[in-house]
Amino acid sequence: MTQRGRNSPLLVRDIAHARAGDKGNTSSINVWAFDPADFERLKRTLTAERIKREFPNLVRGDVKRYIIDHLHGLNFVMQDALEGGVNASLNLDSHGKSWSYLILGLPLDPP
Amino acid sequence: MNKNSDVLRIGTGAGFAADRLDPAVDLAQRGTLDVMVLECLGERTVAFAHRDRMADPRRGYNTHLDRRMRALLPVCRDAGTTIITNMGAANPRAAAERTRDIARELGLAGLKVACIEGDDVSASVPRSQTFMDEPGTLADIGRPIVGMNAYIGADAILPALAAGADVIVGGRLADPSMYLAAIIHRHGWDTADMIRMGAGTLVGHLMECGMQITGGYFADPGVKDVPRLAQCGYPIAEVAADGSAVITKLPATGGCVTEQTVKEQLLYEVHDPAAYLTPDVTADFSHVSLETLAPDRIRVFGANGRTRPEKLKVTVGFDDGFLAEAGVSYAGPSASARGRLAGEIVAARLKSAHGIATNTRINLIGANSLFASAGKARGESDDVRLHVALRTAKRDEAELMLWEVESLLCCGPAGGGGFRGSITPAVATKSVLIDRALVKPRMKMFVT
Image (cartoon, rainbow over all chains, first blue to last red):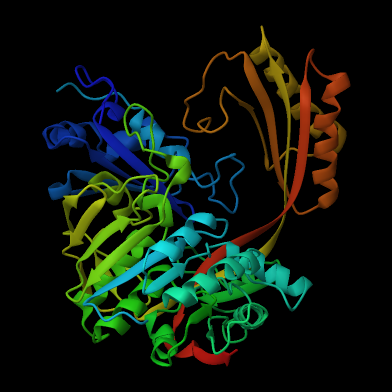
């Protein structure tokens, strides 16, 4: 598997992959380090506070982070983060399927 | 189920209402499956189906049921594969009868089609029922309720398996429960064994979205390349009696099963990984382990489980007016500036000419459509599309919005083209929790 930017990773996408899902107005996004060696950096970069701070107008409610250490993964559960959810959202992507790329587009903290 | 090995082979032939059929036929033909599950219901799908049923009492089930059954019944019969599906949606009885009739037309004599009903609880839940995760009661909805369906679990499906059904058609059968029921039946598990209920639920959870575990919803060119995604195969789980399973797919299909595809699905739409709630169990996925046995063969084990939730979740669907969407495109030099101007014109005129100021959203596709609220907008693009969305209870307002956007062709910025507009009836849903005693699943068998 080729990994773009592997030599000098800049974005979360350079060291991790992610998938977004929705339930009501709650968005959940799981994020996994490709290489276990990058997991600590991923954990340091992606805190619940950081997610909340990056997207204040989108993520209106609490953000909770679950850590799956042995699989090198994080799971973010973001309340009130889907513009009302699939029932009410006027966003083209009313499920927030694309939200995983909001996370993957964030700059990494230094190694 | 006709196989006698100590491993249950269970495949997915649909992971959502509009999922592909031809790879399901391929899987049924070549997969030597004991069971194929067709998972076809989302939170709102069942509400839409209720509206279909109101318009025509013979409808209200998955719109692709005819095509799916015509293609799959003969091959599954030949292969000795049991079909379990929630394609019945808001009308499992009609879906089961239709399946029986198709089987007869195809000359499949002696086929046993089981219908599972009892998930529709609209007659038994009082309007004073409080919502699950917000203040208020059903009485506060203020719009016509179209349906209420309880998520029902494996225990509702087991009697049909025990009676030797070839096809099991239900409504709001919980997604993982369709898999769990087949596993319980094959391995003779005790439904009070919560560790095994957790293990079977893990298999169901991983499999229920079909190709989302074989390379679908995964590819990212250059970072996560997936071979032959256009020919992606549906997944197969080989489930051992101890609850561990191997996730795989047919040889010569596209896609891939890797630890990465399995991980992304492991926590898909999961909140607390240690407490995934279904009608059958409080499943714990937080210590699940993965092992690559061979290319496209991933072993999963280590799920756990605790007591099942005391109450059952019910999805309440109600009419929610209309979603109107309309757009016009701009390209070439200054496309973004012309698109922005078009948006300003529409915003001003919806308000001044039509009195529409709320529940609208105006974006430029190519600049700020998906991530506008996240504050991530692109500055300039030379190919943009104005996108106007409106939610309204009044069809008249929806029509006026479309008219207004179309008028940009002559009255708006230079070079605008490609108007399209649509008005879609909307349903909304809320969730409530009810006592299990209010839900009484029942099974009826039809034989061709």
